[in-house]
Length: 220
Image 1 (cartoon, one colour):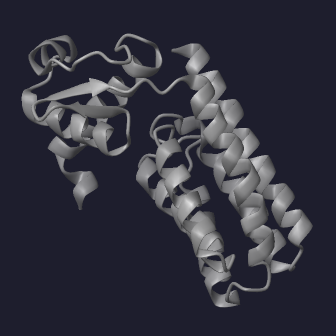
Image 2 (tube, one colour):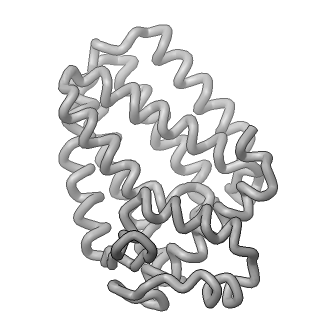
């Protein structure tokens, strides 16, 4: 699997370090990326660095200057919080609309996947493989978005989640157990066809994510 490839894991590690440099201002908006300088500063070779830069470009944190250079597109913390605030408006409505429209067998399968992830959480609250938690997280949100019956809303939710994925369980591993429980609360409400409870559970989840991100940024 891709996640087991050492070079890929290194690229993801470099990717996260570069994200922190952008969000803390060590790499400024408009600054042109100098691969040699960054490779030396991070003590990595050009290959994982280039892979990481491509990831950042795909996420919109870097942009092309002409055909040869990449520069930092400054995404401020307030901008990031605004994205979460939009998710807070859309996703509770999506989960409310999805009530009664998700196959029970699919709900049971998603529940089983989340419970399996929760069983793998270590005593320190972390997962040995954060990607396992990320896959379960993405599946739940995608199932809800697709069941809402509004393709445009589903597309917007996916795009917003892609933008906010930079703060995933790999970056905040202590969120693993809490995130699983928050997702299970959403499933429980869906299983009882309680739209209000499902929406409230989704709001609680996004608020918890937002609070964790603020704590993370404060600790950098």
